[in-house]
Every structure is written in C-alpha cells, then in structure tokens.
Amino acid sequence: MPRDRASQDPAPGDRAAADRAPHDGARGDGAPRDAAPEPSHAYLDQLRRDTEGRKGELAHHLADHRGAAQELHERLESLVDAQAQGLTRVLHLLHENPETAFQEHRAAAWIVEYLAAHDIAAQSPVHGLDTAVRAELESEDFDPGRHRTIAVMSEYDALPGIGHGCGHNVIAVTGLGAFVALVELLREDPRAFSGRVVYLGTPAEEGEGGKEIMARAGALEGVDAAAMVHSYPVDLVDQVWLGRRQCEVRFHGRASHASSHPFLGRNALDAAVLAYQGLGLLRQQTPPTDRIHAVLPEGGERPNIITEEATLRLYVRSQRPETLGTLSTRVTEVMEGAALMAGVGVTVAWDTSPATLPVLGNGPLSDRWVLAQRRRDREPYPAGTVSEVLAASTDFGNVSYRVPGIHPLIGLADEDTGLHSREFAAAAATPAAEKAGLDGAYGLAAVALDYLTDDDLAHDVAEDFRANGGGISVPDYFA
Ligand SMILES: [Zn+2]
Ligand SMILES: [Zn+2]
Image (tube, rainbow, N blue to C red; front, side):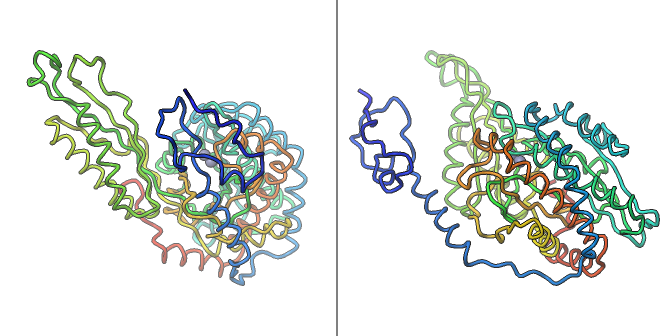
C-alpha cells in the first residue's frame, strides 16, 4: 500500500514544518513506494541562507575609469527609453511564439524588421546559420588601426515544451535596443564616439553552441570585446558558468542466444552498465563543482539476445578549461576500461556538438555594467553572492575566451524561481521582464559607449583578459 502523507504535509510557506515533514532523508519504514519521494530541500535552503548572508558582506570595488561623458549617457538612456513600446512588442512576440534552436525563423525576421524600421540594414542568414542576424555601425572617422570594435549580442531561442523558460525573449531586446540606441546617438551627433559596434543575433544557445558556430564562421573578426546580459531571478554582476563537453559512446559486442550460447556472446550492455557505474565512482575524485550526467538510450532489444550495441550519452562540466580537459580524459579511460572488462569494442566521440568553455569574466567591463545599472536604480549583487554550486553553461563562454566579454544577469523573477522552469517562462512576460529588457538595453549600450570612448578602460580590459587566461585558440583547445 502506498503511504498516504497528505495529512502530514505542511501548510504552504511553513518552512519550519516543511523541514520536519517526511522526505527521502527521513528514516522510513523500508516499504516500496509507487512514486519517488520529495527530496529534502534542506541543502537548497542552506544555499539560500548563505546567499542572504553574503548580500550584506560582499561589496563592489569599482575601478575609477572615466567612461563616456555624462551627457552622452543621458542621451543614450533617453534613446533606449524612446524604444520602450517597440522593444516590449518584440519581447512579447517572441514569448508568444517560442522557437527552439535553429528554428528561430520568425524571431530572426522580427529582429530584422525592427532594425529596418529604424533604417538599419541587417544580414540574415549570416555566419553559417539561417537564423543568425548581423548589423554594423561605424563612426564616420572609423579607423580599425586606431579605434575599437565591440559586439552586443541577442539570444532568442526557446526551450522545447516550456517556451521562454530561460528568458531569451528578454535577452533579445536588450542587445537589439542597445544597438539601435547607439545608432541613433551617432545619427544625432556623428562625433559622439569613434569606433564600431557589431550587433549579433545569436541563435541556438540551448544545447547547440550557436555562438561557436558563428565565431568559426567569422562573426568575431575584428571584434575587440563583447557584451550580453542574461535573464535571471536577481541582478548579479557575474556568476560561475561551467564549461561543458558532450560525448557519445558506443559499445560494440557480439549477439548470441542468451540461454543456449551465452559463452559466444559479448555483452555491450554490460560494458555500458560498468561505464555508468564507473562514472559514479569517478565523481569521488573530481572537484566538487564538476558535473557528469549520462543516459543509456540504447541497451538492447530482448532479454534472450546478448546485446550487440549499447550507447551511453553524457555531458561533463567543469569550472576551468584545464579541469574540463582532465575530466574528459578520465571519462574516456572509464569508458575504455568498461569495454575491456566486458570484452567488447568501444568508440568514444567527444564534442558531438561544439564544446562550451566556462565564462571568463572581465573586471573593468563588469564595473561599467554596475555603474550603468545604478543609473537605472538597480544594484547588481557582486560576483560570489549566489553559490557557485548553482551553475549551468552558456555558449558565451566560447566568446569570452576569444575576446574580453561580460555576461551579467538581470533580475526579473521571484528569487526562488529557477531557470528552465514554467515559472520562469511566465516571469519572462511580466512588467518586470519589460523593465529588465530596457534596463539591460541601456546597460549594454552604456558599456559599449564607455569601452569605445575611454582608452584607459580599454587598456585595462585587455590586461584583465590576458591576465586571466583569455585568448586561447577555442576550436582546437580540446583537439
Ligand atoms: Zn538556458
Ligand atoms: Zn539561457
């Protein structure tokens, strides 16, 4: 009989009662269940308390670069706010018509249309992707030997089944609004700044590495720095984003009758199971924030046939490119060892879609982001406020190791709302999301303007990048 726990459920919001309620960490009666019990939330609650504690403790130590003149920032801000209606329309159009990776045809068309409405010509398709968008702005005096180029980026792909649960519809309008504001600033005053701004609409962030495909096709040629902002529950200047590699492993056995001639078979499923268990043991010796997750999508057809072919598909994630490389090597060895134990063959195919590097932050650019957000009455929390345990991956990592870049987070949801949830998808269409779209647009435009205008800032941005390991050759880093 399944146990009925309804009578013990705590009232919503009764945290103390929730902690006392039965969960899978409480001592049970050992009886089988007909459903997985609710995991204890005690660890998540601890992380939240830790975050709360750090909110008062950590502080920004902002460098005192001049940036662009205050009157330019005032103009820029009003040029963003003047787009409120148009940007909000795009935000909702994308939200109501979610398109998954590589299928963002309407999204790309709406972005191109928005740019055209502001007399800006765009390229799409571009950089090897049907749904990518590119537009450029150059000051009249632009000289690539003397002046700088910065890219601002939009994402707009959605998640299968839950729409804009990552809030990319908001991200879309931040890059778009920033670029249009900078175009109009230069139209009003051709001497407002010298340099070049590249707008990149970057599809297929979710699981497909669209930015890596675009970068290999030349999207970042001549680009000195890059900026985008991601939707999040709270404002956070920077967070840990793990590097990620994908791997597809195939074990090749020999089919045989499992009862009459088992000794003539070699079982690929045995190898896959040993490999899966080997990953479990490997986790003991990895850094605590490394991640390994695997599925076994193919393990045989019938119990009376020794499994001839088995597949194991996995992701590994790590905080540093170097540790991601080490983890990949260990995983390959576990796969090969499992194949040896089962007496089968194995093929290990890494990077079935482009590897994602961790995000390399940039202190001086992040400082400009914080100052810009303060103009919008927002106060992003310093990096480290939210636990590094709560980390995912983004293809912006591959941009951030090519050129200095920032990937701050802008808040639009209740603090307990996780990304990739239905709740976050709902939050991405609220007035808070519309405001985040405008504040994010101004933030990106302001960072770009400061970077193009202030030589000392640009110098320190490049120094910070070099000092932290930027500039590696991304496509062949794991080759
Ligand atoms: Zn996502
Ligand atoms: Zn996302």
